[in-house]
Image 1 (spheres, one colour):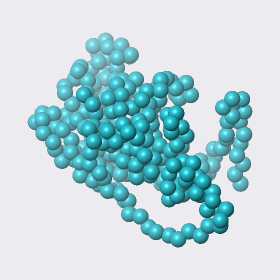
Image 2 (image 1 turned 60 degrees about the vertical axis):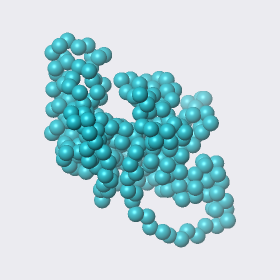
Image 3 (image 1 turned 45 degrees about the vertical axis):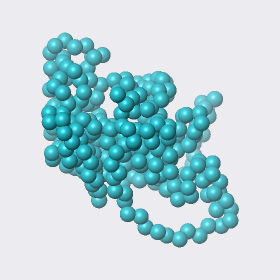
Image 4 (image 1 turned 120 degrees about the horizontal axis):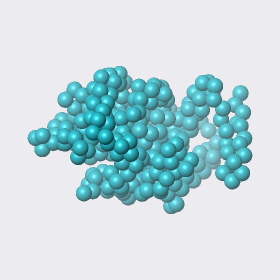
Length: 211
Length: 75
């Protein structure tokens, strides 16, 4: 059964907080939004950039995850969790967590349990990309990261969270308090591994993303 | 940051031998998590391994130094 908690997103057009919901697990309704709203909007943005001759290296690195498959893979597994942020009857962000198979890489907590973010993505209209209109809503990513930290705390993992970041997201995770361990040669695409400590996780929950 | 609701929990009594309890306490201390969390982690991994095995996958341990692989036989 899906559980819902009230949260708030910042609507950029009105510069005000608007009511939203944090859901777990993700339902078919959010998958439908991804299929019918996210995918066309992503394609439109990428096509626009292509038509302007933007090289592949400068294209948005997000928007390629097949959320229907990602969520189907973890159906009925208690080792994984899924979350969505919804607002205005639309899905604004999605996240998949792994609670079982990854361990801390920070020296002082090496091999201790943590929550690993398999995937975290916000809707294309919420991307912060100066080449497009300003995002419709902000804070969806922060709410999802906050949920991951809280799941870590609830499982006695002390707020520790780890992930492999897409290169374009590294600076955002840095601002959230993550430590960058550099490129991980054992991971596909050599993506950098990043991890947040208990102290920085507490600071993030209190203060959010640093400016 | 808003706190979300958590799934309702159910309580059960668990009878363990002295040795089993010692192992549980040892893991709890080593991993710095409470005993309930140790058991939850064990259950998560157990179900994940079972699901993967049922899907036709094999479970291996790989030695970091030698890269030697040893299959865990689950029957």
